[in-house]
Amino acid sequence: MATGFRGNGSSSCKYKCDTAANTLQWIKAIADFIKPYSFLINAPVVNFFKDRLWEAVDEEWMECLRKEPVGNLLLIPSGVVQENWPDSLKKFIRTSGSLAFQREQADLQMVLPGWCMASLNTVLSQGMNQKKKHEVEVLSAIISLIASDLKSRAIVDVGAGQVTLTSITMCKMAQVLSFHYKHSVLAIDACSHHGNVTSARSARIKKYYLAQIRKSGLEAKNLRLPKAMTFHVLSVDALKSLANMSLQDDHVEKTSMTGDDQEKANRQESKCLALCNSDKEPSLVLAGLHACGDLSVIMLRTFVECKDVKAVINIGCCYNLLTENGSDNEGVQNGFPMSFGVKSSGLSLGKSGRDLACQSAERWRSLENEGGLHNFELHAFRAAFQMKWLQLVHLLGVKARHCVVSRKGRVQYRHGVRKISLRHHNQILLGGCQSTTMLFLIPFRTMGVHHDMDYYGIWMDTEPYTELIGPYWSLRAALGPVLETCILLDRLQFLQEQGGSLEAILLPIFDPDLSPRNVAIIARKVGATVPNRNERR
Image (cartoon, rainbow, N blue to C red):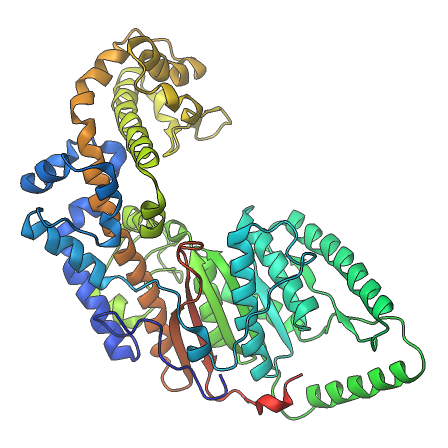
């Protein structure tokens, strides 16, 4: 960081995003490509049978793909084609691949000079699976490097804002940054339970480190505990106020010291106070791992608008939760688009497009044939169920209209709590007349709907077309990485439009096979004070 970023982690891609002009050119190429395929992007698979969606696709493509093994279909989102496929189909898949940001993990030591990842001990990594441990080890090392280079006063660790494993991972990230890398950290999360878990876990880790200090007879040092705060971040102003709050508390927990140790600690503390009270502006770093929806956007806007925030490291997710221009949120700063360039182009993704951007080529590729076939069968059943559902809406009127069937097969009232999940019944999906009839019957009986209809007949009417759902869904999924790239480039473009006051890159920091949502936006303000590396704490 002291010498700036080196490269952008996407050297093998046809397009570049090293300047605002190049980034906008890439975005426009995506917009031109996806325009003819709006019928794929905007058509939910749930309406596959109702709207006969396969008829909108090139007939030659569907005839070719319906004969392909499931394994070949699962590779389509990764840009893999078979030589015997129609040329137009191969061009579509290959162009999709060329427009998507490349996900191979970057050489972080080359892009971020001085980066060095430490393996976490069993105390800090307790409760983490392989994926989470990998994410925390890699990202905490990056955050620490940038915070140390900027002599950051504190790191503001922004949680996911929802009750998910991501929020819990961010809590553990804060502990690693505090205990292992010795930074002051304010961990923000919307879930009070996660804040309580963070505080309790920090207390246990503190006891471990104090015990290790006593056993080893090493010089006692101040332990930094992460400060956990429950807060639902809904605006830039809210996050700015929390960032300023973090400057007022260094979150230092002093160990019990006597004699020379205490004197040394006092001298060190005096040096820190002198640095903080000098004419230099306070320096904060914002960090967020898989910050959901608009939360990632709020972090980037806060970085630009808050003078004390000198750097931001953000990995976004849950694009389906983004607000978008043209929706019901007029007059507010929406999550997409962010940049002036994309706003001027009039590009819109829509709800289905933002949903599709969540599809991961790596996840598709990792499915085995049985898992892929099972996934296609679930979509087929759900689409067949949708036909029955809409018939009942027509026949039963208001009561049915007040209910929702989710993508997971749940039926629920909009203003109530009645739910039923079909997922645990899917193993008998193709189990014959009685089983299939029961699958349709269960949710309606649960809702108190008793109507004499030919449930099995509907399934038999749709069953001949079920083999087309795999090819159709695979073609849609091929556009997922392209749409995600568009969202990421829009965010990068927003930062690049700020001019020479900051520098920003997109960087795939995780192993995509472990963590497919692996592209980080890393930015720092060029005017930020960057001391010599030998002066790091």
